[in-house]
Image (cartoon, rainbow, N blue to C red; front, side, top):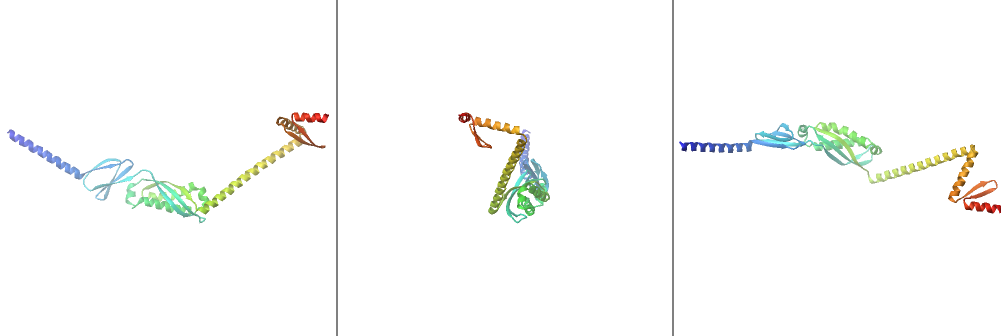
Length: 269
């Protein structure tokens, strides 16, 4: 009896081991664990057919032939560089544009276009040629922010069709040919010199107006003229300078300080 119980226990133990091994084999072959990082979304496929989207975290699926494609949902930028464009006045420029975007519909992005990054690049390139081609070169420099708004208005609807939200399109750099750079430098220098001359002329005009106003005031107030004369004499005494006044009998030098007193004694002697 005891022998039969041991035999039964052994059979049960072997059966449990076999079951555990079979479960491990089944688990290894039919259990799939997927980890989706934060900021991403997982597109789950079964035998090449789209099943569902998986958010960030750990996901378990039972069965075979499951695959996952992770799509980045974070904001990012795409540089559209070295674009040669003709302006409305037929000036050839090179422009660098920065497109900031975010994937908002990963299913559409993955299934409705072969290379959505290339599509975004092409959208920005075509929009740049259309917008800059209708603007003169001087207006382009003065309205860079407005140019960015116009580019965004053209790129955004096209990108939305493939599940991309374009947040901003900015003109980073505008590169001119060497001869055009020199021409702009000469124009800027001429404008600065003209502005400086204008400011000098304004200053001289203001000074002349002040002198004319002072002359009219003194002409109508002889006492004020004498007071102004006394102020000039006092200032001359303090500085030791000689003040020469025009008198009917000729020019009489008025000397300040000790020199003035010596001149008076000589005249008295």
